[in-house]
Image 1 (spheres, one colour):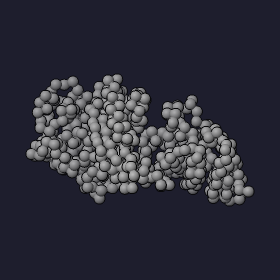
Image 2 (cartoon, rainbow, N blue to C red):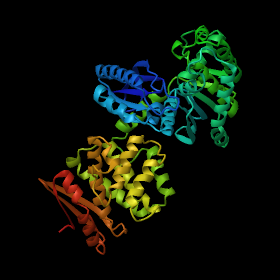
Image 3 (cartoon, rainbow, N blue to C red):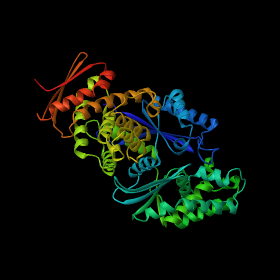
Image 4 (tube, rainbow, N blue to C red):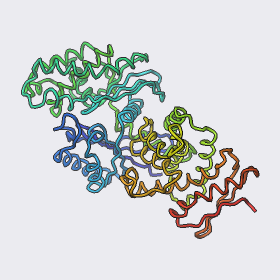
Length: 516
């Protein structure tokens, strides 16, 4: 049996990373076939990270073209996740469109919290901490992610807008030397940003701090060589102390110029101009959180993307519900907004039954089934705000919620499906629908059509329908409904009143009736 291959791309603020793996679909484990890294500096030239410059964007697209070619040669399915630089840029859509057209890569934009989750998934596969509570810290070019968790349980997560490139642009950009005034200002700035993280993280005890990604890895390499370790040593599971970190940071600051920093054994030349800011940031994090030592994980975001994709694409193919982390985040949101649980559960059951019986029509897969399940559970969440226009409120709540397990793009799709469970059909004059790709719009139309009929079948909110049987004969689709005789006619009327979108999308005539 040929094992499928995946190519995960981490579109970072400083560097782009590619990892190509071969997947064992029975166990969910993977074997790394190759890695590639390109120093792109996508976030350079803009201290506030609000705009991607043309040169930076060109470098990014060139890197993606190279990665796409490598993935294609390996026969690997590509998944690309963008982080801080793209996430914050007002012209992010220009980059996303260019990536799709010029490199053939569909870019997903992760929220800071979702980025932290991917990194955490990667770390769990890299270092022996699955039975420990860890404090995860990942310093990127534009943001730093924190997470406290044990196994698959996440107790705290946060993403703050502090990174090696962002701080360099603000405090050290254009300067030939590292002056004490800039160092002091940078430390004070970081301390102010850390207030919330410091306060909230103190509520959770952890066994060990684990660091990942370029800045922390490079500092660990400097410390390892200072100890007398090999220049090319593997650093996975490597542990360094607070005092060792402070000594390395002092060396970097005292080196002054970039030229002098390049003489520091173990320093990555590609990071020489941004290592000062990154080192000060980690030092200040150690001080604020009172960290005594840190373990290194060589796995991070890209390996987390691999694991998340394996779960979604392979391990969930035979499951009939959302993955645990996605289900828990959906139900947490539903409970916060006090949905009518019985109605939500019943409509979800009906919607998934319709989905499973109409595969011949919609031709969608397990990922889209999960979108439908999430949207159906949450379709009336907007009722917490007001019953009037509650479908629009549902869209806003879902779109702006922190939902672990869902990318920003997936949240947009789920929110749109929920928004169209009643009233207007999807239209290009609706901005939140129009901004999506044609493929995504079609998925929304198909799933909203299913949701509308399922919702109509519980018009009375009494969960009266016990079963649905669907027959498809040419352009005729018949829904045969069984259930409580007292309400069944109302439910059939409800479904027939909401069938028009289904008929439009699939080009069929729908009849909803009780069995004869």
